[in-house]
Picture 1 (tube, rainbow, N blue to C red):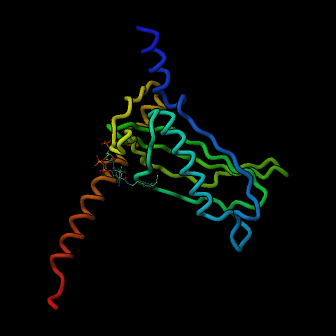
Picture 2: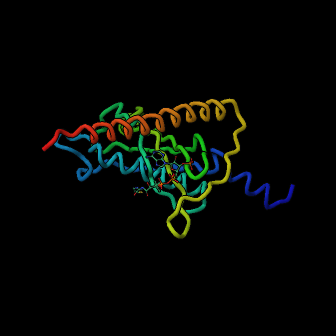
Picture 3: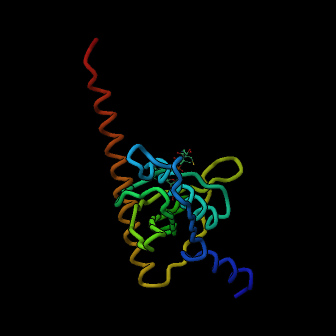
Length: 178
Ligand SMILES: CC(C)(COP(=O)(O)OP(=O)(O)OC[C@H]1O[C@@H](n2cnc3c(N)ncnc32)[C@H](O)[C@@H]1OP(=O)(O)O)[C@@H](O)C(=O)NCCC(=O)NCCS
């Protein structure tokens, strides 16, 4: 196998594109309860997923959708928050990135699962049009399991979009006469 192909293939793995971002919760990041504001955490999740997908696609990406966002635990002022993003699945021009967030109280060294989400990121070319991503190299049993789960979520996501679009169209057709 040519050296360039091997180098490219090494990039097309889950671990090569992993992105980890770490922040400390400052007073500016908190809500009136003194815990981390959800919108700030969402921005950190989106940033981590964006870096991961850009690293993988080697082009600009945009966030198309965020699914299954869950805030598992409140995060307190001064805690250290780590968002870890990894590719689960690659379609044609889109991929699913899973982000898991942990929060650490450095006074006690205790770490908790704070949040998680799945983001669909789409690669764009220089004209801003969706463009193909390299195929994902899936090797381990864990990677295969994550890919299968992501495929199921993608099918459900697309089916929900189709049904929502159909329902919106139907209700628009049944507008009461003015
Ligand atoms: C995301 C976007 C580029 C998709 O454009 P589009 O014309 O619908 O593109 P396509 O229909 O060709 O779909 C492209 C891919 O995105 C996926 N996609 C599009 N909309 C989606 C959605 N709402 N949820 C999940 N996936 C979606 C498609 O399934 C397709 O994936 P595939 O190529 O792997 O099969 C466009 O909707 C957009 O620019 N949205 C705004 C993005 C944005 O501003 N994000 C916030 C800032 S980063």
